Image 1 (tube, rainbow, N blue to C red):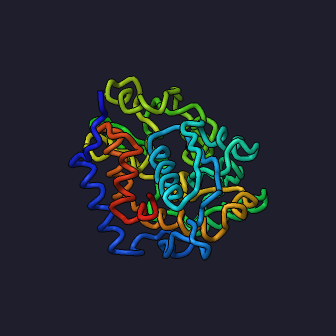
Image 2 (cartoon, rainbow, N blue to C red):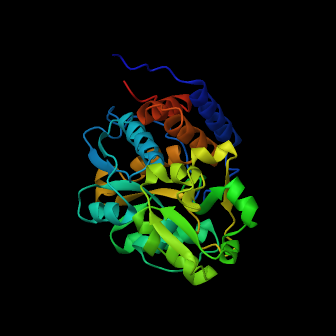
Image 3 (tube, rainbow, N blue to C red):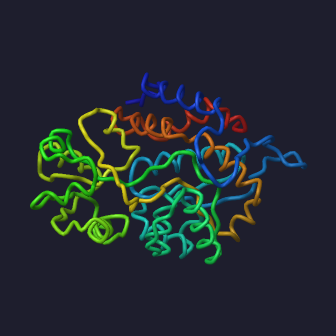
Amino acid sequence: MKRSIHVSAVLLLALALALFAAACGGDDDGGGGDAAAPTTTEEEGGGQVGEGKSLTLGTKDFPEEFILGELYAQALEAQGYSVELKKNIGSTEIIDKALTSGEIDAYPEYLGVTVAVVARQNVVAKSSEETYDLAKEFYEGRGQTISEQTPFFDVDAIGTTAEFAEANGLKTVADLKKLDSFTIGARPEFKDRFQGLKGMREEYGLTNAKFVQLAQGITYQALDDKSVDTINVFSTDAQLASGKYVVLEDPKGIFGYQNVALVIDQEKLDELGGDDFMTIVNSVNKLLTNDAIISMNKAVVLDKQPEAEVAKAFLEANGLLAGSS
């Protein structure tokens, strides 16, 4: 059976939102400087900037990362780079080891996670710019570097059903302390992270929380069937657009600022053309607003569009596949 390559109405909406965001320009606070779209696809000798250059790009283990991986890979391939895309490597703890061991050359990371999980700095940054600077300094100390960061941010949060929130008077994470006990469903690494249950207990005194380990793909199902009271959500989850769920405010800011940047080995970046390579990556990043990402997540997660096709349509609509043959 041939797979249909037609773009759904939902995906067209995503593209419309992306184009609107691109037309508006730097309204979102992306930090890390202004990105510029590639002005040429060819070097002086007539070849594409990435001709003869290759890299291995990894992603973590959830749909938004798969979309990001496809966006970067396809944009780079359109400029002549050869990209091996390894999806679904694992959590930050796992994919960081893949980076430092040389299994991959680069991957997209959430910078608040970099600071808290990779650098193990239990600090509450005051802005996305401060988070970016902390992450960049850490990576450069290890011989790596990062691109400019995206306008969009995908922060961890605590979600529950609107019904449960109303019944228990829940508006913030701090309100959970009023309950005799409650369950929180999340992936295993959430339990021991400061930007997770550890930080919730230390900063909010939530000793009444009972952790339930859940795979990423079934958290909302577990919440719907009342297997758990709350779950770890991400602020760009497609499911949050339904109105069925409430995201609790985080007044202490323990979940930090989670804009995305591409992390890459510095020596590899030099081999790949340095600024020429980063210009392509940054031209993708500057288009990634919250509206665009939420719409692409919805197309993939809820409407079952293949992430490669979603990414391709987005890039084509924004003129970033012009260098492809």
